[in-house]
Image (cartoon, rainbow, N blue to C red; front, side, top):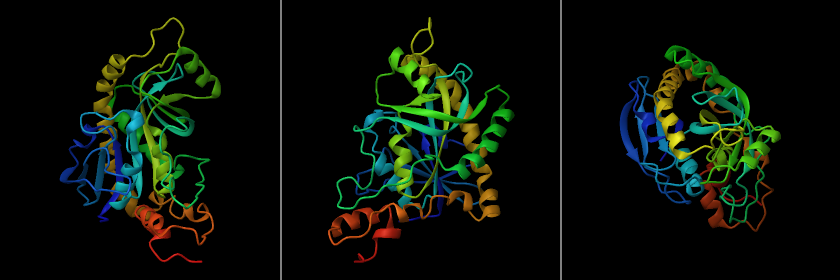
Length: 309
């Protein structure tokens, strides 16, 4: 069911209310891993390029971080023809200079969700794959986004700063960190913290999709001495203040997408294509045909044909 959709945007449901977009339709593809968090909004840029918007936590923010159907989300976007994902997420800051209201483009992740969330399309199948994840975000896409995000923040004039080359800790929720944990994450080299970037980034890599995260700081987590710890009320207050800026950033990024694609031949969106070719363990006679059919939904490049012995 692939369409003329080059890029997917994952974030809040309000992100697609942009002046430079025309709503086309809602789609809700059923994948082998279930339905996505919410119906996906397909919108059109003036150039004709389609963009797919997906609300990570469901319409009205009804899904807890640990329960987000990330495999269905990524698989659904891939089935629509998406080649790259720009994700938006609220984050806590582990550094004094990254004040609430700041934006960041992280390049590294520390995983504190292990063992809780399904992290691979290959789980429960007879096929083993070890995806390369040393650089969890797609470098070409991150570099392309940096100039556009900085431009949008400068145009708005609110004084929001952009931080790059940062490390984000992804923790299990829904509770926030203890003070001891927050201090430990700083000692580990963490700069930001959230509950959403994983397994999203891992699954995007398995699906051979370029992936980048635009993070918006809402709070200082719990590490600061003599300060109150983060509360949902504080996060929501800053989140509302950041919402208009996030929409401006999204509009700027998407507005320049067509020109960039035309100039580069989509190369900056295709960085991960072929990356799984050396990750899937050698074919064997024990691969279940049903498992191959399931994986073909997200990786038709490797599993839609007959098994080679």
